[in-house]
Length: 166
Image (cartoon, rainbow, N blue to C red; front, side, top):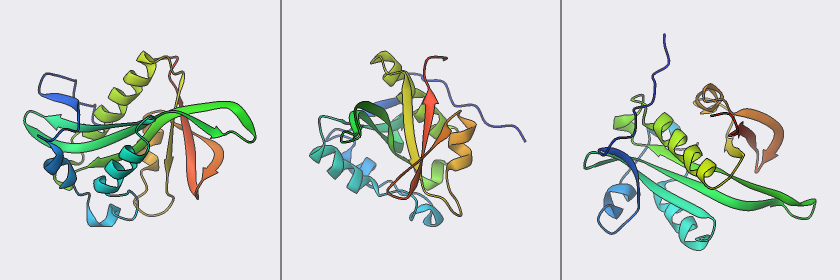
């Protein structure tokens, strides 16, 4: 079975800022019931984005006029300043693809778009975390080239993607 390739960005498929025009559609997104324990709801992500505005980069994943998902990156966060004040990281904070739109390449598109934005900002590595267990997104992220670092963050596996080789 071949891995689906992400749809190419087009004027109809894009990441868009969350605005009053798409806010309700973004908040209405829900993953499959068996995934709810693996990712926070979009409403929590938007609250975190508001509280951490300087480092949060929330975006709707839009295909045509339809919101199909939500992605939020984190930008330049000191990872563990007490141990290494120079360890500044950026990466994927949240990824929610609507249950009705999963397995269509939207998640891959969103990760590729976020990593392209991080490259544009001069970032050389992108980080992500995931919960272990049934339904984990680990195979998805490993398939995109992320590799576990051996670290954990709040009980989640930490992985990194080298952005210097597109």
